[in-house]
Length: 329
Image (cartoon, rainbow, N blue to C red; front, side, top):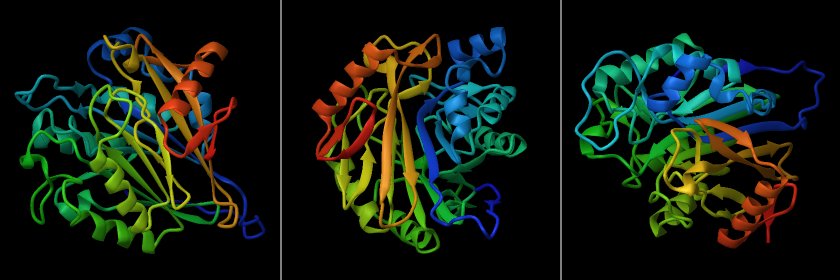
């Protein structure tokens, strides 16, 4: 895990000042997206969303690619390896931390994974969900912003095989196939944090509703101290649910990705989480985006209306108003 960062306020600053976190889905900087970057520069993928990303106090995404010039592709349908210079675009766009617990971080082997971590460090981007052993892979990213201690953990339930799992003395990724050691690390993180966010990679591709296991895991995470669960992997937007007043976004869809044959893969949401004090709870909202030539673009009024209608149809006990504000029914 990357070195802890601290952004402490002046002593006279009000402790109830709102803290804003933005989360986006899968970021893949290879294939056609890599070609667009080579043509237009590293900032191309984020030109239409950087203003939103940069305004947040903490910006999180799922890095759906290894970043290296080394390694041999795994024998799988899709293997991604992005050029190191592409990460500069994430830094410029305001990303603070990325999840590596997903089904592409080891596409080119362990050397490429460790290169990815090194390149993230060089670009001052923290990571979660991967490491040289279990304790590092499951460790949270910790930071203090506006007087609030925040923990972010990355976990995956979609890995090609057990060889990708981090072990006590084995490098790899943090997995959610079993309650342990996952919940022990979650509880430890929540004990030292005011706000704990679980970033999940799970569920089935191009579906609208989560798998039963995902709903069960989300509850266990929240029972263990997590304040919000935000997921990706399906390349489609899934419904929203609240459990014990904690929001669960089962999938926010893609963000920076190759053009999908399925229209669901060309629509997504950016999630905002706002924390002031415990009495007010979490305020959350969505910004619908469409993906055009690998670049996420906020939807126009008609597109936003359609996405909000879809979310209201597929969500559980959550409702989304015309401005994208999400509340319990």
